[in-house]
Length: 452
Image 1: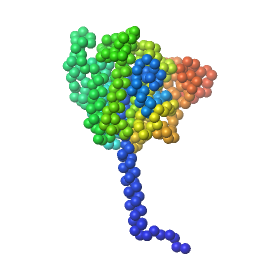
Image 2 (image 1 turned 45 degrees about the vertical axis):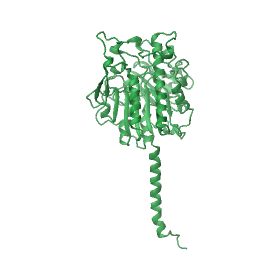
Image 3 (image 1 turned 120 degrees about the vertical axis):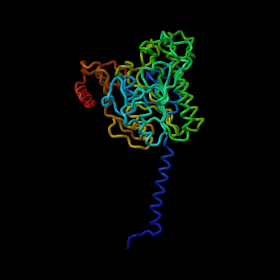
Image 4 (image 1 turned 180 degrees about the vertical axis):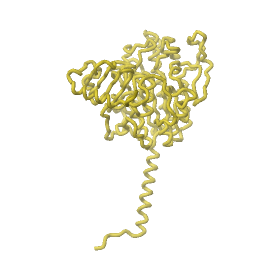
C-alpha cells in the first residue's frame, strides 16, 4: 500500500496556515501585553490598611482594589529600610547579592540591568514619580540614565523626607517651587503652598494620559506616610500634611492625626488612579500593584502601636522580624486575576522583575534571585522559593517554608520561629530544633556573596 500523500497545493497551504496561526498568536499576545503600574508607599505597615485589618484609618479605595484583585498575606519587602529595598526591587536580587545592605549612599553604574531597562527594551514607555534614592544629580544613577523615559520627583533620599521641598526634578532638570522656600530658621513657612505628594500624583496621571495609546510602565514610589525629618529632625510634629481632614476633630496627638491623614490622602489618589484608567478605557489592559517599601516607622513622634500599624507582627522598620519586612501587596488586573482572592504564596520584592518580564513577554536575566509570581496571579501552578534572605547592619533573617531564622546582632545566636504556629514570633524554638538551626545557618551563609 502506497503511503498517503497530500496534494501539492495542500502542501503549500500547510506552512502558510502555520505562519498565519503564529501571526494570530503573536498578535493576541501583543494585544494582551498590559500596562504596568507599580505603586509603592513609604513606611506603610502591614496593618495600616482596612483590607489587612486596620479599624481606624480609612482606606476605602485601596480596600476596593483588594476586592477587585488579589491580596497577598506573605509578601516581603526587599529590605527593612528604604534605599536597599528599592535596589532589590529594581534588580531582582536580594540583599545578600546587592552591593549595599543598608541605607548608605549608592549610585547605579552605567549599563545596569533593571526592571525598567528591560521593559523599555521590550517596547514599553517608562515613567516614574516619587522617591528615587539610587543616583544623585549628574551621575550615572539618575533615572534618565537607568531606563526611564520620564521621571518627576526626588533624586536625593534625604530631600524626600520634606513634603514641601524648594525644588523637585523633572528628568535631569531642577524644577523650582518658590512658594515652598524655607525661612532662615529652617522652620516650615506658612507660605508653603505645594504639597509634594499632590504634585507627584498630578504628574503620574498626566503621564498616563499622554501615554494612553502605547504600552507603558509607571513606577509611583510615593513618600507617604514617611515622617518629615527635615534637617535630621522632626518638624511640624513630624507627620506633615496640608490638613487632617476627617481626623481633625479626633482626640489624638497631632502626629497621629497627620499619619492617618497621609494614608487616607494616598488612598484618595489610588481611587483617582482607577477612575482615570476607566475614563481612558485602560482599566482592563492595566495591571496595578500596590505595596510598601518596608514595615511601619516609629519616627516623627508617630507610635507604631497607636493604630496597630504592624498588625499581628513583631517589630517595625529597621527590624528583621516580620513587622519590619512583611508588607501588603495587592494586585488588580480585571478579567485576568480572580476578584476578591487571597493568597499565602511566599514572595518578595525580588520577584517583581521576573513577574514584569513575564507580563512583557521577555526573558529575565540569569543572575537574579526572583521567581515570577504571575502564575499565582492567574491561578496556575506556581514555583516557590526554597528560602528568602535579608541582612542589615549585623542582622540576618532567612525564611524557609514555615520556618524563620533571625539574628538580631552579629554576635548573637540564631533565633528560630515557626510562622505557621507563631506569626508574631513570640516563641523562640531554636533549642527544640537544633538540626533546623544548623541547616538554616548554612543556608544563610550560602545566601551571601563573599566580599571584603
